[in-house]
Length: 201
Image (cartoon, rainbow, N blue to C red):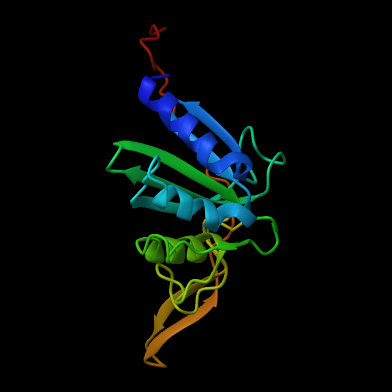
């Protein structure tokens, strides 16, 4: 670990204290995990404390850990992951918070801390169903207005639940149940008789 990363980890521990549930360093990247009840307060400290100064939110996304190779069943299902940048100190941190309730994932919005969180949180809500408490305009941003469900959840069917088509008799787009039959897609293997230079008899 470089001296700069050591300083960052030390500053995070000193400033956040027991609000930091976990701090790890892997591949020269620092990941900070906080409990959902401390999420907003930690975000403010990360932005405002002079020894941290994370002025910029670079990215925020939802994650569904229900089928994760090593974490499935060991942590809550849904998380919100943010990537923060300090221009002042030229360092980055990944901030992860898990939603306490798997059936109805809710966490604080960071829009009042970093306004750039607005559309990122809308995307996370749209694709994963994570609710961001305090967001002033939490509505779908990528899927259609009548879309049902959250397509990036691991249990969402690949073909979806409904399909839309243009009905010339009604003169409009209509929604109907999916007509694609579920099937397992297995590549077809074609073998030639003399494949691989087999000798002719």
